Length: 283
Image (cartoon, rainbow, N blue to C red):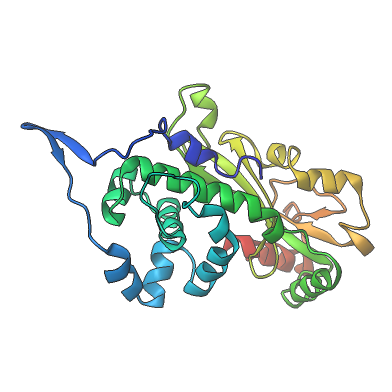
């Protein structure tokens, strides 16, 4: 989790002690961009549940739960002395909009009627708060929870399974240093996020920050999941349970991958191949 917000750091400029006006340079010199008044009150609060989820990538119930967990951490009353105080709800909405959309800081700040420096501080503050609470949310299943996860995977056709592992690419602007190493096989710059999820696609382990050109198996061997695997701990993998992954990963007692198709697979083996294609991380 130590690299969880690498993209935000890469995109951020030097912080400013003052709130810059939103400006663009035109033929007549600098022009101030108009700001949207009461965007949250007049627009966001009137969103349907589907519109809210589409824009913020979570439903209102989840948003309220996250806000409850981080509200104290992002309160600006004591942090930004002498500056305009932004309610915790607005800060979380601003940060989620930034995380969930390709909008620039300039666009987001105009939409939420704040200065660019304030927007930058807000996103960083929320990112740090989410990082702080992540160990209480992203947890390897244990006890009764582990048994429930195993049972649910069994119902999906995966016996003795406690998770599914896969990776994805997070697009970023190409860094100046070692930029080519960030170019992935899809020919764009990225960092890699590796995650293990349960049957409901809830993350139970997360590792992010390796350069986009890295192979999935290399990322695995630098992550906490690999340390769990080589430790062969009964606490992490009791009674021969395992996680499942695709062919990019090594096949191990604690990590089961599809059969290699040599043209002689049995019906049962082919069925497992098809089931693997439909694993939770592919949806």
